[in-house]
Length: 454
Image (cartoon, rainbow, N blue to C red):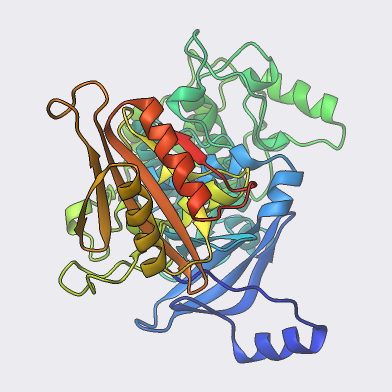
């Protein structure tokens, strides 16, 4: 893996580079699509396939300063779970020393909010199609244990084919976020779209609160304005608690009845997603959208591929002497407090890995490791650029025995990572081995024995 290099540039250099088009691995970056507090979203094109993407560029320092590490972890983890035609797709995650790059599906039709703002309310037929897709996407998320918690027009995008894509899962909740009472307790969302039970601060069901927000979106789609609105938040919240939305009489009886039943301030009697799908107004011209099945996709990314800078070559294509490519999020976990590796690795809880970096080349590192462990009385087995270090006493896995796998990953031509992974054996002997190697390899004290207990 080649780490993305970020040097110091002056204004003229930056301007020339942007005019020429910055390269990020196989992607060529273009115009800025949007900008937020901790990064930008840029248009990108895969230079090999010509396919368009949107790359969300997150500044690690800003993420840490704003204390939104958990929010970013949540968004990435959630999008890994969701593969639905009406949800923006996360294709890949890349990383450099200072930035995280989320390669997302490119949706070029803008926000539903912009369409309503510029053109006003939609016809019931057009609005129903959008609402059907919204319910399909949100109910799919709920079935996967994901609750969005910030559904609003600004987070509903429209693609080139006129279909909606739900975006921005930074405030979403997963099953582990529920308390012992089975409810969520974090107050979040946008004031005009938030459900009354969230404001009551007594706990809420993520599915029913999302349903309320969908009802607000339906209201705006069909009327062109919000059901609950006031500049004074206290007054706004009073209106939401009452749930007394003024539903225009010029809407069809079916639409009025559906909105009224969804915008029920009582979550226990509010319409559910299943009931919405059985509603007569909703079912008109309804064609359910099928989720994307893994084995039907042309480009299915495994956990390792999702998080790597470049897709690793197949075993047949690999040079046996070449170093293994490292997972980009392993690097983040090694080098900073922003550790997102849990979303991209599955490791056995019995393993203990220790990693450290070195400026030596791969061949030198492997030779030094072999010399050091041989001096300690270990046997060494070599295969495909990896070392297996073994010390046996009275038979395999007996007290005092130890088996350790040593592997070298390339970060850049001048930077490598040594990973030691214990297969079995005495923890004290393992620690002594690691300390000996870190000393012999000249590991800086700041990097010494960077351990991962898993």
